[in-house]
Length: 265
Image (cartoon, rainbow, N blue to C red):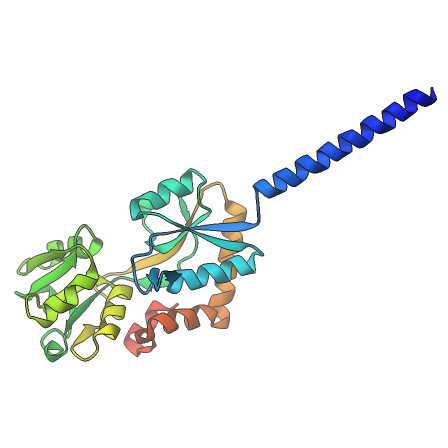
């Protein structure tokens, strides 16, 4: 009887030991990490500077991870890979300047928007009086630069019938063409135009009137409702206490202009 009790105690201890070990292994398999999917080619939203990820989304991602007691892990992907990676569970959230659209909502959920955005126009400073309204842009015979396969290109081809359209692989290629008068304006996402105007303020400026309205938010999996609720609560707090505005204006100082103040809601 005594030997049987001893054997039972030993077996129980062994079982507990292996259970603890397995628990530790499980814990190690799921560390407290927030995996953030980014396509870092969109200054000032998300880009690389001296080899380091930086910009609006990088800063907000680090802040968000801290709020939920996790460390941040950036996962760099091509733009077209972001949504599939999220759906397959390879990342936890997309924070890469993604516009909230009905088409994307078919596959993923979005947080509340953090920026009211749209398209803006970059012009030569000397042409500020010539192109000073949405109407003057739409009805111009100008040569308009756009980034290929973007909402900017679609907008120009639909709404600027008199214009000649020139496409670029990326927005950063356009300012030199604008200065050299090979194009008359660049139409692209508002954050990009704000950044380029800041980089080239001696020669170029923006027409500070949104041509349309878009909203930027963060993509999450459709089965992550508790996480979505948590992130929206954090965003609401940042909006109310001014934290969100502080980050946005840091990277896009033109948002302090009265005619762009509506972009920060």
